[in-house]
Length: 268
Image (tube, rainbow, N blue to C red):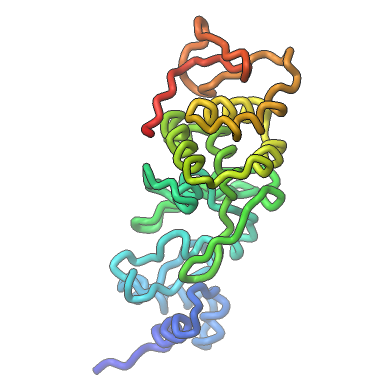
């Protein structure tokens, strides 16, 4: 019977300690080999789905329950990856909405906000998609527990504003309105927190979110945004749909000063 290799024993020990991520330097020190040899030592185990590398210099051990994947779900290693890359981050958009209970349309990717450019990654069935967001660490995010630790996740209020700011990342305005309606119906939003978080976003985003919340019947939440969205009333009207839809003959919603250049049809 073949003996367990030193590399395989290292991974087993790592999982037994409740850890998953380890650096190339740590592996090299454990095995007593030069760092350039680590990839060769772990290649066979990677082919068996026992370990994978989401970034140069970082390895993640895979427990038996996910070895058919060859990876872990993105939520279970994103924090280690971002720490390794030195990135401030939070899980956002539809990925955050799902964690907050809006599962009408499960995202096919893990959407992550980062402070600096980060390349997207496809790791087997796991797809990481990064979008730049200024002042990531200053925005309201909260820790969410996972089987491997904790990850930063946008608060419900930040999630709503991110979706209104970039509807394309929320699968379009119809789906964004659906998600907002679900979260509002479940009482996930705090009106004061929503207004405070909205200060970090452009006027057009505040107006768009207010319009959508009002459209799905969350009037009190919309009212909390209206004093912000009403600022600079002489400011030209913004577009409800930032990309797409003709605005030549579109009506203007006077309350929100939005050109309603598309129809909204949430699935509620």
